[in-house]
Length: 530
Image (cartoon, rainbow, N blue to C red; front, side, top):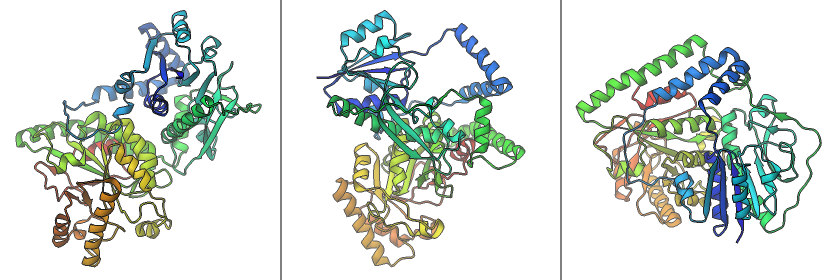
């Protein structure tokens, strides 16, 4: 049995993912988590504020005002516990610390004599540093096979932090991840594994960091396997390189203005629009809640996505960082439900906020690579409606060939099966994404039957929901809707907009389309009913 120590400076999602991945890969290993808390005294906080003021200048004041205002205006939903599954619970700190063979130490200084003694008594074979403070020899030399660090940057060229920022600043074409041995000096040890990924046309710092988190977890699993089986081959770092540090607010502003994702509206127009959205969310939203209370009409908003991809900006795409912010917003501000809760009428009679559900259509590969990790991070249930004849093939969607003149990769059945195992809902979107109102009726019926059979056979599903391809009002006809019911589908989703109110017709679930044009405030205003 092998003992593994994790040295961490936070319990962020990416850190928890890394710990969970190693536990799953080595379920019999004993794991010790040493967490150096970042809690500071009032005096230290005031000192940090003053240092940040000196470093960032006048920008620090509005920055802090915005932070404080955001916290004050945060709205937390009433206690609401639907019966739906919640993907991502396995990565919560509550679940991880309840695992019998995981021990946990919280400390102010992991280099204190008391902590060092506990680590020595644990007798770790391998140490792993994840977002930890700079480790001293006294602790990183304790594990018999040494201590490795997951660095989200390509060394020696991008030592330090934060991930992805300076690569974008320097107009690089790619970002990297490195697994290296910890030695004296910052990010200077021998390299075990390196990997790179391209920077997309519309990449943002946040979007790249999310993608690096996933890349880093897979590399960490591989690295631990190589070390524990003594197949590890190390290479010295090249000479040179540079160490980067946290950027100032001015530098962040310069980079934001440089990126093609910048909002091109005039400052005045942008300011006025965001102000109106804020007013609607916090003033008219309050009035709406009182009206909802009087009318006893619960609002249910079903969001419709297609792609989460930084290669495109169009009417069916949102950015990676943008999607992460949107999922954080709905998790923080609204009761989140699954599509099954709606179909099965498992909804409360009233909550002050709209209930929100998340759905995806078509089955693009980015749903698995980009959307799923974010949904797991925020523990948000989601439904994915796939065209079963396109899954796992090089066949593209006709609407993509027409609009962007290219074929985009689709998910495989293996990936969809994994999503299903992670408690995401998989539903039907026909076989080949036909238009159910315009194509031959016999073909439509054939595809309704075949798509359902595919999902039953591949995933052993017993209850399957159908989402109309295209899904506008003219694409949904009464006779085809009757066929959907006849073939045994438990519900049907449209795509022409609108907000649902209890009681909902399970064969007429309205959905609101979301694309890259939505700012965070516009997104919230849309959910609130604007």
